[in-house]
Length: 269
Image (cartoon, rainbow, N blue to C red):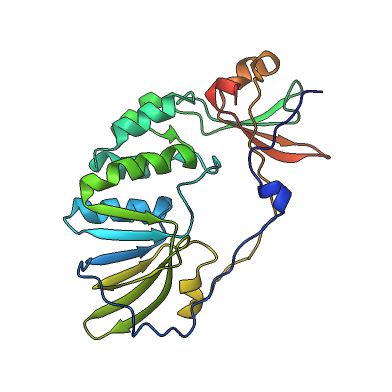
């Protein structure tokens, strides 16, 4: 049995989700920063960074704050459909996104549902590209691009649009005033507080949004569908998968296993 090296402490620590809630906060002794951003964004993941670039495209500067030290470390979601790619084409980012995507994925291969990862039967093929049909409707291409590939790309390009990201910084307080919003941030390492005045504050802080809770915005829907464990490992599966290795996602579905495998680099990751 090959030796596995632990690269991420998440499994050793167990599943931990840090809950943060806005409460009373005295910011009277914190000086107001001279720089007044038209828009401040809470959260700088895919949604927050994309918003900042879209704003910048229309000449609106923004700054976003994210409590995480950097961009995503796990692959997570990968499929970018056509309307999304039309938007990034409008921004001039589709070329670099396609290059990144092609470095790890066969752009035309879709998803498989199988009863066994190796051997067995292919139950269904999904999301395979039909280039001729797509070309009748749009010049854009559907891409496979994982979150840990996409977020650094956005971060590299954001400065061109007047968008700034501050990682390792949490918004700890905000309050609306007649002429704008007061926003207080805290550096996660130094614990120093910084206070801004902005015209608009936008919440892009995810499904456990502290902003949503503060504003009393409730979820509607069926709730949690299930629980999943994500494991990121490198192994060359091409000798075992054969032609299946080109498919970016393979789902295994049988009486014992319900799992999805995201295969990168032609099945080598």
